[in-house]
Amino acid sequence: MTVETTLLLDGLGFPEGPRWHDGKLWFSDFRTRKIMTVDLEGNAETIAKVQGQPSGLGWLPDQSLLVVSMVDRRLLRLHNSTLSEFANLSGLTSSYCNDMVVDHSGRAYIGNFGSLLFEQPYRPAGVILVTPTGEARVVAGEMAFPNGSVITPDGETLIVGESLAARLTAFDIETDGSLSHRRVWAQFDDLGLLSRRAETINRITPDGICLDAEGAVWVASPNSRSELVRVREGGEITHRFELEHTPFACMLGGPDRLTLFVLTSSLYESNGAGRIETIRVDVPGAGLP
Image 1 (cartoon, one colour):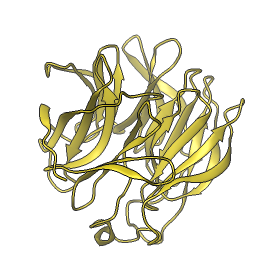
Image 2 (tube, rainbow, N blue to C red; image 1 turned 90 degrees about the vertical axis):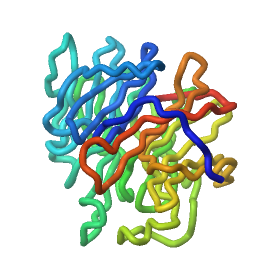
Image 3 (tube, helix red, strand yellow; image 1 turned 60 degrees about the horizontal axis):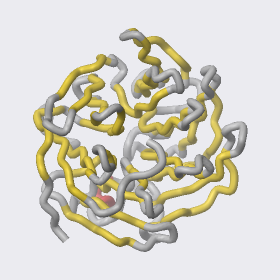
Image 4 (cartoon, rainbow, N blue to C red; image 1 turned 135 degrees about the horizontal axis):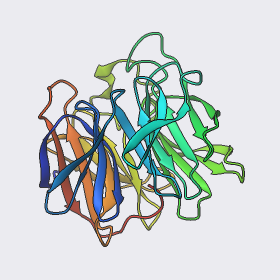
């Protein structure tokens, strides 16, 4: 079904990595290389600029901000208005880094492209763990473009969207941050890997995701129908919304966490096509981010 959204902010480049934090929506605009915030009245503020293009965001226990720097494959820390390198990931991934989720102890789980989108030959990617002291290692391999990620409220399960495999994959989180018991959490089709852009036309391609209090996941799917999907473990789809603009990320926030923020843009247009739109939902957000 088609659903109408409410416009909160427009004129952006390509907004990604939305996080509800301290009464505002935080996000990265990687085309303009900015980390930004916007409040519920649409008042926007630039927090910092990241020359390597910012993506995933998250907070350490001391409330300093971690930022994925995509192109140079680094994890940065913003503290007292100063950006510094927290971990260099270039030896652990062959292509751009992207989204991230940070747990309550400050452990960061970061995805990456593997290879540039639809570049041949296809190369699988891994999930990288960065500890609160800045040590980095791969904790899950052979993934098809690990992208948006969430952690359940009990801190025991990581769910990752594999954009090129049309699925959500779950792991148990061990006490040392390692991942185990890999399993398919939701498979959207049985058509195999997406190897060409044309194959995304009618397939659900998980990009940014968020979790709600019933344990369902909202999935931004930048396919030809510009879909926003809510899915339960096992693959049951409860909501399938078609939007006017293409969604690349989503986040449940607001004071009651019942506002679904949808970040939309275009792969083909230049700066100015990015928007933040909202939908009111019935089930509040839960877990991380």
